[in-house]
Image 1 (cartoon, helix red, strand yellow):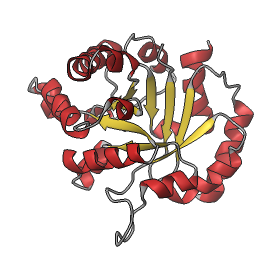
Image 2 (cartoon, one colour; image 1 turned 120 degrees about the horizontal axis):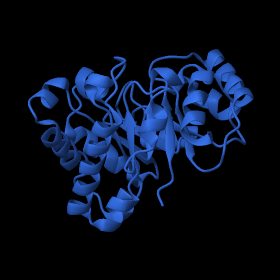
Image 3 (tube, one colour; image 1 turned 60 degrees about the horizontal axis):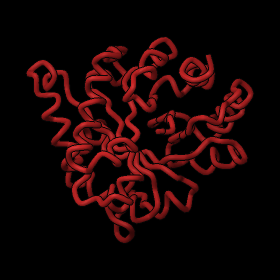
Image 4 (tube, helix red, strand yellow; image 1 turned 30 degrees about the vertical axis):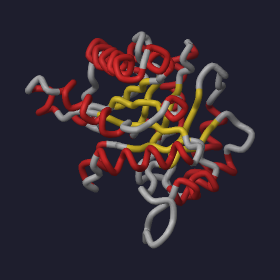
Length: 253
């Protein structure tokens, strides 16, 4: 049985002082059940503050990105061991914003994934197609290329640390969400691909998340799909009540 997971990606939002209040307000609002994993990805500057404010709760921390090197002359970068040292258990890698705006290739993402595995970080590995890819009927081909490139060289123990997050580029921050049937079709494709490449056990154990304009209205129907194991939430995670409403509608009704 795959354990569900909800991830809040704050992106480049929320200052240190605001992050403390976010945690306080969220914990006041929420009555969290223990049947799923809850992960928050603050900006690097706020990781320590969120860690302190969330101490003793079920909230786990993620880095939004990390360097493709472990240490050295890499001005402005944050390494896997630094994320671990800051209290992170997860890291988001391969996000479309990193691919688009910072020209991160499958090769670079793969190097980061391998480093994260070597340093005991769980990976939220993002893949997704553009609207042009989908309209041309190339969505699955694009996703397969990202899967092949990003997961190249991983062995079974390392694959156990990887969650795959399907985020269609055309749905991120646009208000347009893939309908539940579309999401299930893609998640089924991903799971079958994992089965073909890595075997039945890995395929059945791998958690596959959906991300892209998730809110409390669409989250129940998304989470009811058999191959949807969690949600990667962007803008709606910035407001504690909105984020909690997504969790409540997904698990606690």
